[in-house]
Length: 261
Image (cartoon, rainbow, N blue to C red; front, side, top):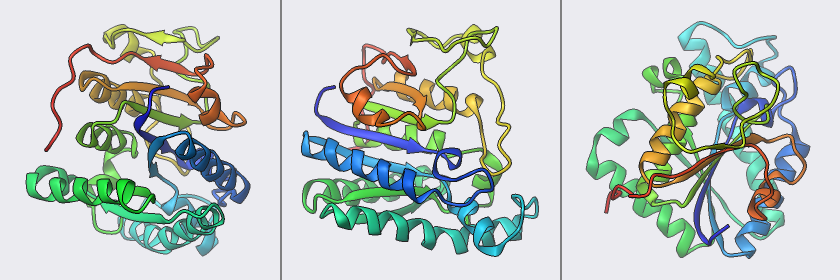
């Protein structure tokens, strides 16, 4: 995989165990892989879900609340716990974890998204840190209704000029219509591809394959390759870096649309 900026999105299903409890072992593996890729010359931006799931665990309730205020409270409690785990693991590798919370309103303002880009690029270039981005669920009412961090990861990949977006989920990629195996390569996202997507069955996550296809469409139209792969596969990021045929790869359009400067 060529050097440059890579955006990795990881969902709640990968970061947590069945009940929503954060899986410290998987987070440790993820951070270790990211640090190895950084040594190989990759600049990694991590878009991470899991705050609400972490809050659900801390509060001690059995499932994700449907009440908006309770959702926001879970996010507020869980975000710090999630970042603490990231910081503990990255610090062992001599790296800093940098938290960035964004909303749709930030992307509606060219000035605000430009400032976000400059901050992210400074973290990558000046401080060798790992930016960890999440939606600001505690205040972004629309985001909680929107779906998942999939679209956010694609928008981040677009405005920083990433070469690849990797979306880690709990399935092996986009499955064929009959659901027997994952498609290896998608050259163009058309109606048939979109119809193969299935909604999420997770009690803690949001989105599902539908939102991941939407994210892939944003990325590929911007000239960015997108890979949807199983985050539970051992050393998945390192294997993808070595170009092992895992997951579903959505090929980038030939012409890259210019990002925000």
